[in-house]
Image 1 (cartoon, rainbow over the protein chains, first blue to last red):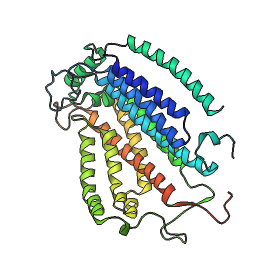
Image 2: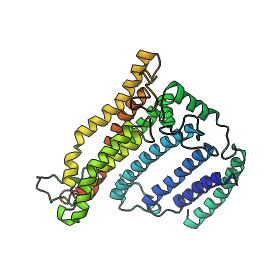
Image 3: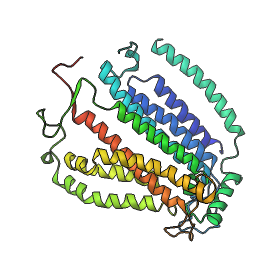
Image 4: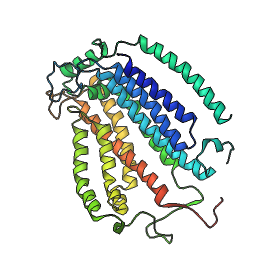
Length: 114
Length: 259
């Protein structure tokens, strides 16, 4: 079933969204967002796959070997780096929210505190 | 909105998105297709034109180096943002080593098993070496500046696992890392501008590309990998240092605090 890897990507996106909406803890919400983002890794790598292809790195494979698409792999690398930095920034925000509001439950964060 | 109403709304929306996704997936190129026009051109350019064995590195640091410049500055900006967010607030005090505040809460050497400490100290130089190996071989084998930089930054924290927080702080002084991160980020731009002057285009690969699979092959690819490796390692060490400080060294001031 050739559409199966794409379905995995779609499922990851939806399950991450479910986690975000049902979240009772901001750290859990940040991780859920990471799950959403990992769906893009799966989708990109699935789009770039070529049957029988090996890694597009010719360190010790012959230059005429069949390889998967390197462009989407480069995109995935960028995606991972951006995802990691966004996670770090959101966790830093979570620490500050916990200090100001003494809670990390999104449902209790309804008031503005200066 | 109540939790149940919100969940119901989500399930309805998710069903819609799911249907749209499945319809869209049906229109994508077949999984495992042999038709990859961009990939084929990237491989040909990397191998025959630029002599870069790692085609992913060639795309990231040569053929589409401009995108990586943007990515690098996203990293830079978010590290900066996290550092600003995590600085000690007005009503907080940071424990200094010889100040009159309580000693910091980091665990003392005696609290860690001797075997764990020994392993930490033994693996530290090995991990540093592996990290640099991954950075400088970015043009030949899987790896590069981003991956190697992460290995370098996290490898340094073996010292924390070995229970030696003070050695970790001594080996990762904040000020030089601050400067190092900014200089490395600027160096990427400088390499790009050198390409403009010498080869007529921003981030053009202006160095000789050498022979395929040799350490100096790829022209500017190893150079940019090293620069990015330094920036990533410095940025992540700074970031983790701030998170550690939050947990180990910063307390709300009991006297005169506003909250």
